[in-house]
Length: 173
Length: 173
Figure 1 (cartoon, each protein chain N blue to C red):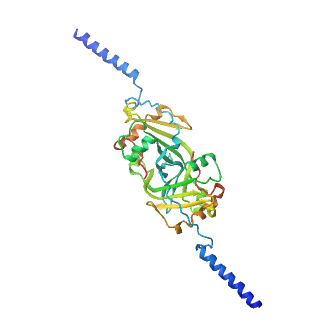
Figure 2: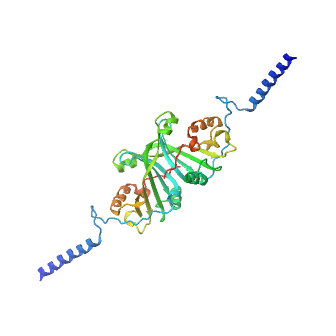
Figure 3: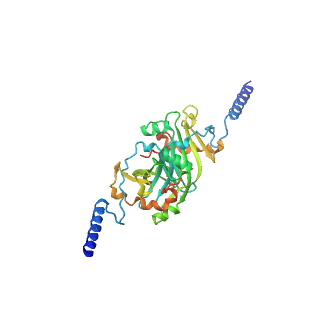
């Protein structure tokens, strides 16, 4: 009886594990991969400016970070964590030397925004995206959303910024 | 009598010249220096983004160019010349490497906006500023306007951009 009881426990554990695995998305580090469903927010190109940056290396872009009204208000008030409904938009363009500007300045010094590369969004919904600090992530290339698999690494890079509610960008005065 | 007549003409010319000179502001190239009276426009930090840029050299800044609604509409519609009432704001910040970003990326690649340097404006009023392409120029350091003498060279740099209504910045998509 003892042996049968033990077998039943083993079967129950294995079955339970299989059932759990069938519901949990596969992920390299064993954690459930976040599935975001962030749509492109209407009118984001009209949002207010948070700050600007330049990334060298493979990205080699100039970028502007914009926020909807909820995000801008939180930034300006120094409110942490950001309230639900806050959306951050990161626009980026190729980093291009401006020959026409340099001609006027008489030296090679001017770099401007070339073609757009992609647009990324962070959307705050503390319940829906609880597993990723309350932020949902999205990227659009030429207006088309990238596959969810490509977003599974987003949050990991933001974790070191936990003290600032996972946001890289500081508000530019 | 001929001699007296000649002397009178000389005196008249000299006097006229002196009268003209007393009204014309002194300027290195002999032209009248523009006197702008551009006030800092309220709420410009909330304006929509036109584009971003990086200037190396002495400026060494990251910059964002914003526009009021009239300017943004004209940019998006490709309207030239810009209508009266258009205002362009150029914000700039020190070009600063971001140690905290680089730590996450694992390489030196990230440059962000540091302290603000100054803010410049171009205000379109085709009658008031007719001598300078219809644009009035202003610069504010720490919120204080710079002397008019420091603005006398502004327009000369913009002249090569006449075909784009004297604006360096193109709209970033």
